[in-house]
Length: 196
Length: 85
Image (cartoon, rainbow over all chains, first blue to last red; front, side, top):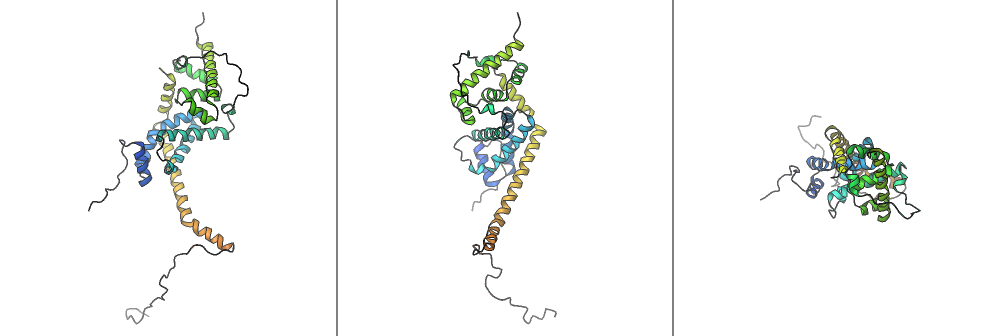
């Protein structure tokens, strides 16, 4: 009679979903370790985008992973595992921001939307800034502006997703980003553009 | 070229080694605690709820395990000569 071989742990070659299923069934430490190692850096990086402070991002990373592993039973695999992880990440960070009543501006809807005469700044103008220049520009923006810019260009979050996370319309997010890009370019040019 | 990605790489590089391991240990500890609490609730939750129910004047819902499922008295030592009296 054939008996099932004892489970010896997850391997790096396994897909996320297979590791999730194995973890649910066996709670094996290797499955935990593999999922953690795959996503820890990315989750931390996104937490830094939202919270800006390393210590807060580290605490958030801990909370996020605890939540992920406690809710693994609810993950049904309809979306990619990474998408599920990142949505938990952003939602937890947004909760934290709301709780501390910090950066209300991030969620504010603009009541007056004056006709926009701002010239669209091409993405390349920001992306090609030197890292030190980029850091300077980011430091001069408000927390909310910095968060939006980093979500879009560092984390690559789609406008539609940003809008749903922050409870705004897509056009509001686009408009806000347009203004932030213009401000960022202005800050950059004031500080770094060569004088004639 | 996207230097925002360079910023992301710096974040990823910053969260490695000791820092990553420390957070992992904290997560493991929290998961163990959660597991312990869940086990305790699973074990004693129904009994506690039943006790409170009875204290409030209700009828017991749980049928607790009977120590003597056959309802027979213990047979006792009988006339066993090995027993020193």
